[in-house]
Length: 115
Length: 111
Image (cartoon, rainbow over all chains, first blue to last red):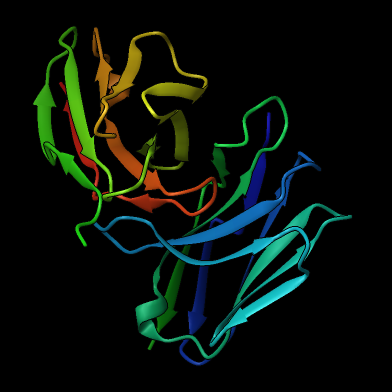
């Protein structure tokens, strides 16, 4: 099955700096890669996603890049703010073995933005 | 539009007991997925239902089971509870194969 590795597990930045979180996946047939943000005590919420026919997607201060050849994708947050502090999860949707309704998640990155 | 609703939000059980958790998806969403969230392990897939049929199952023992009703509401059951089953159980609904909308979760503590 699909395996998603996420790095780093913790990331601390100063307000205004950029933050980058990286994920790798194992199933070359995976074609959908969402990112979820989970604030303390709250539910995960989708912040951005990308499909395999696109190399980059941007939404205000957040961008995601995808390298299908290397099987990795990254989340970039620019001009970080304290409210960006949360756990971020990457995920990949499997396409093999009829498991295309399942998202496999990375283990998360705790981002702390220091004022 | 109401979001994904999970009940109960918190519960405490003892080893050997069983528990049933409920999830009501967003109106019109026919797919319901369940995930187990524990510290350090992220979100691990339990199973996914669509139109009352289980389409996928994760690598959990048979003590974990689920079902979906004709109104798309779903339940999951864990029998013979173990200490390691303590976790936040998240339900997510989807209108298609991609975007998941999560509920607030049911936090289970096994003593």
